[in-house]
Image 1 (cartoon, rainbow, N blue to C red):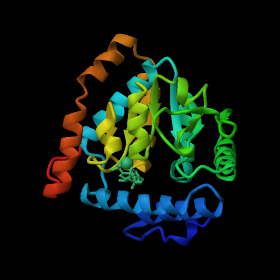
Image 2: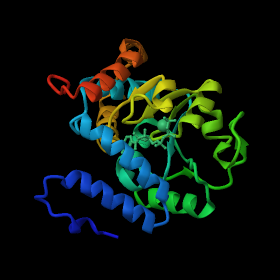
Image 3: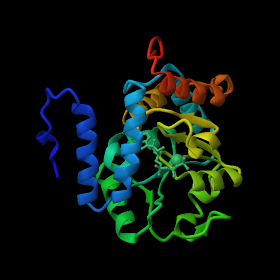
Image 4: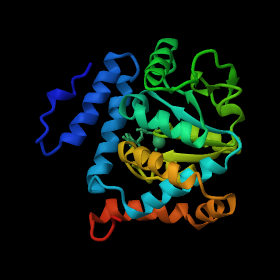
Length: 254
Ligand code: ATP
Ligand code: MG
């Protein structure tokens, strides 16, 4: 891999092109599915309309998400082939700072892809990744996408599920999980069922959450709870939707 040099530094769309390179490399490494490219393209369209920036309400959502993970008994970070290809460094370091278990959780589940993703995360410093050998099932879901680890997502109280399939996000909600979803589309079912919808690109949101985790980890539980209580998920979705629909980017940033 190491093909990032192929994108010229001074190209005006260098950030977006680098993300695409990472996903293409993710496919070559057996981590990312071809469907993942389509999902990313859908995300890019929303990101374009948001001005490729973290809007203020998404920054608030990141903060509430980090506080929720820090307060959780058993937080789990669900990682798929796009997340592993795009932000492996931030994923590993964020999980470690908030004490979250990393579980590889795939829509198009295959042992080879799970193994490729787990090795990639291990190469980026992850000490434990729940990958193959999962035997529990999310109730109400047919197919392999229901398979999860008993000691991971199945028994979690809080689960961070970036770029999640809407159907599975609903089923996890029905299990009583507190869901944190990173999804650029505020209208997606995943965003709609999330206690904390982060309408932002994961390439910006996760490094931001990683930086915040260090700062918030020194706060007491009461302070963290007040951060969570102050967050309004419906407003966060509405802010993102208004920005996308009106195209008015005035004052939406921080
Ligand atoms: P729904 O949730 O509406 O049922 P879905 O989850 O089945 O739909 P997909 O297209 O599979 O639909 O989901 C991919 C989602 O991930 C899209 O909503 C897209 O906006 C989002 N997405 C893709 N790439 C990124 C990214 N880099 N950062 C944040 N969100 C992304
Ligand atoms: Mg979705």
